[in-house]
Image (cartoon, rainbow, N blue to C red; front, side):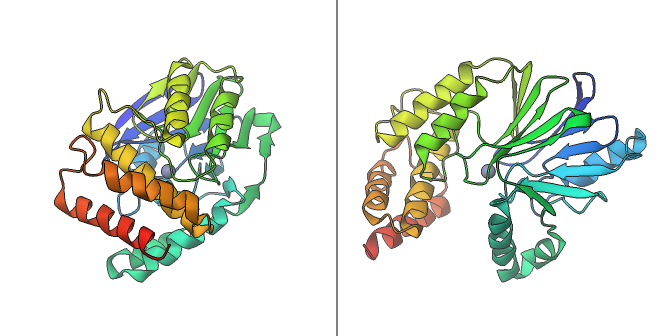
Length: 293
Ligand SMILES: [Zn+2]
């Protein structure tokens, strides 16, 4: 675990996970300790964070946890530290329920399901702790329930998975809304922008690059030049996830477009996964998606 003090009151924890490291951020405000995201299911990132906070006498104020969205790698440790509030965007409750149901289906994951703690305070557009100078706001795109945090005092912006390095993580089909969200980040004055995985950024260049990629992705016109294995991973799962999401909402024709694109591109040596079981899994998802059209 790497620990880095940031601004006047922030601590960034970077913890190992695969394929990306996990970043959990704490903000020590006058009346609370805010914790942004809580780690991966069946991994124990929050135990390490708790140990550090305890040793450094930082667990003296009431704790407030904020989940940037309901994906499995952001919510698992909600119960590790006693907290007064767990905050999420209102749509995240459905995501938590889906995650709970999924985990509950498999023996090994049942304990993780039992330990999953849902948000007890939700908001639609925005929630502000005025005395603490902390804002939470809806930033749909990576998922419909995605939300961000802004520390007004230190001008630190936490974007969750709205930005992922090296390429945007696409799941939800409303790509124009995703682009709008990324554009709006550029209007916020920030010194540092913390991504939920891997990195911290200081300017808007990466936002522009991400917008450009989403536009090309939407037009099914992504250029694979310079693609690494990680780029390929983000791209192939982007196609499959968006297609599945479109199909779930009855957008059969649009879904077919992305499934067919995935079917073609997965054979391209640049995009094809090295891992045979992942390859099989993707082919099965594509065939299943195209079958009942
Ligand atoms: Zn995510």
